[in-house]
Length: 387
Image (cartoon, rainbow, N blue to C red; front, side):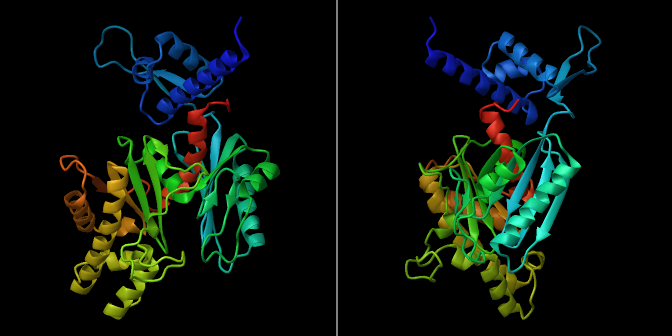
């Protein structure tokens, strides 16, 4: 007689297998049953049964492709159906709240943003609900909601904790607010972990198992993927590479430490410094466009060297394969990322023959927004209990 535990384990295994195959189809890694069997390690019969279930439920479609050789049967391609459920992604930022409606191929169906100044907890909740309402009025076939937020966050209790300079908003139970008000499942993460997931599944890091996403804005945030999974501790806390100290006698930081990376390279700090030396107030994007100005080049080069100091430490700890420089770091001209890459590879202590790649995000400045939706997709991919 089968034990209850065995039945549970087998059922869980079936869900994981369905999630794995759905992920391989959704992310474009596999488009045929043969590829699915080879990549997943599942038997051809198991793949056929799961794919047939997907097709029956309207999640996946198949189509004959024209064969280049006019012999034999035409190959059959699998793809996500246009009738498959969609995902809402909500990004909670310091200055705005944004929403994106995506399908499981990460194609955008709708995007909206609400700017916020001098926000309050009530205004923030109102903005999030307004975004949800507009998305649900546009599309009612929604499987779930992914939320990305400025941190720190408590992913297990679905709370935005106490982000610095966030209008005094803290301990906001955003997951419960949305799930109770809209009766939809919710996945919640820090915004840069979300960005890392977007790059892992649909962006420039598909081939990497271990990498860092570093976002440079009014602070410096990070999301880390290790062994194809988000790096968390036992309490669900993520990384804070912006608070690596690069000078123990350095600038005082809001965290209470001295010399934190973000006190030297945040966009607020850099823009003030660049305005001082050029005599012109501008955006970081425009300063980067004018990098041939020797004064600007000197400051950007020094910024890169400070980033390299912190990131080399992170590489020596994590032995990652790549670093993505996102948010407004996306505006760096390529020569500065090449400089960053060279310093890290020359300074890291691990295998010198294994080169660390430094690159920009596929999703540009919107990596966190797309990642908020991908965060829910990740939940589906790991345990396909939603279909």
